[in-house]
Length: 159
Image (tube, rainbow, N blue to C red):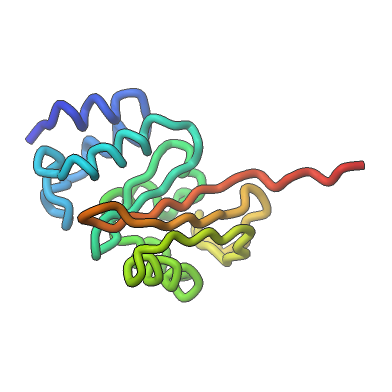
């Protein structure tokens, strides 16, 4: 089932194009035409920026991300991560990042964790990224919970 708002929101993005091929009806989110307005706004925001953004939605932590975030996933996880549970996609670091999501879901209070040194399996080999370093920001919106995990370059030392 095609959804005009979803096609428009994902039109100018390579990952957005791939997101249109996901069988969303087989995910906990269901087809985009049934998504609540708050999720639609979050998706529009995710795909409208070049800043790396990964968002999850609902108790299953269903993953949506943009072009900027794709490199964080590497070749072993992208594009299968679209519509998958963050718990599954990031199983190797879930002991470190799961509590961030749990805190937000339990309290509704945002978290901010900078310079997390995580051993991530991004392209078939576990490694710690040197740059960009992950920054996790998690928060809730009325009626549903979601999180955003971004990355940013490390500041350069001043001479």
